[in-house]
Image 1 (cartoon, rainbow, N blue to C red):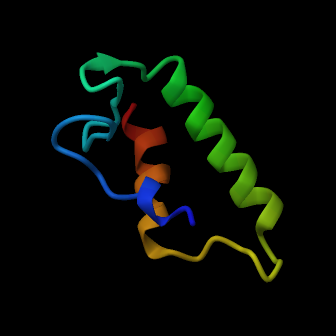
Image 2: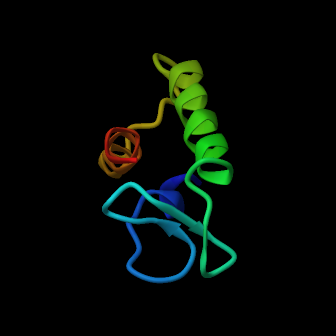
Image 3: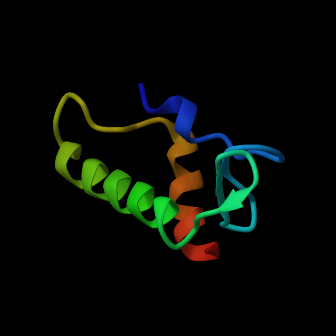
Length: 70
């Protein structure tokens, strides 16, 4: 269910390769919606680690990279 969040985008809403986060098509929200999204995903990854619901999609690396690049 989380897999649609992971791919990088080149236009519109989502995470970009440089770590930025766009929402509402053209508005940069790295410090607000983006921060909440990354924090929530980080918490979710930690809470689910070691359970049958652990997030194992290799594309989750995009989230880790966004933290480093933002």
